[in-house]
Length: 264
View 1 (cartoon, rainbow, N blue to C red):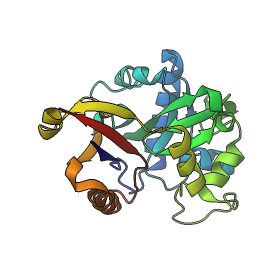
View 2: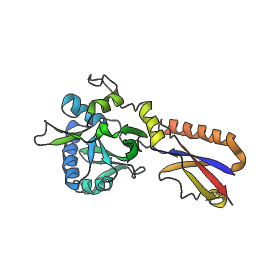
View 3: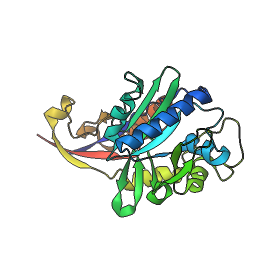
View 4: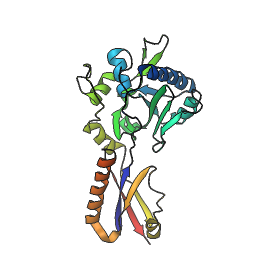
């Protein structure tokens, strides 16, 4: 018998949405760029951080964080590098710490770092935290630019920053708009589902499922277990419940089903 588990990856928003001072964010940007460069972290500025620099030559006057994309092979260096700046930074979110870190200290930050995994054969970058996927050439190799408000500071912008910003903010991203926010269009979410999260087939014992002992499930994923006798109707109900939970909790939804073969 076969049943299914709908995986609902929990997405917790770390940034408060409340603007923090430009001075505070510029201090964090300068510190992080220097610390990451010294530690060998491969990174690029994204979202509102890239928008401000590309459009206005500096960070946006009103924003709530500094956004950074980090390659998966250097993501483990993020914490140690930031610890050298502030020995005890406040970690705003640890739920998605495998994919995402958010740090702030008094009068500093916040800095949000997103882990990105590459699907080499498709030349696509997968951002698990955001459930989005982008062409690698949009971001890498990075384009280094001088951050004029801070003499001597060079920052990495996406290779095709116009393409990145058009996807996130629309083709009119050059025009300042109050309250503009990243929109993550359906195309990059669909690409994530198609290329970054292929279906996974596993086998688990009935008694293990009954105890909720499923080591095969990905980290940081909630799950809803269905008994085989309930069939497709229960699967449909569970999928709707999962989606409703996401709409309430994060206003986002996961996109894949893990089919489990039940064996006694």
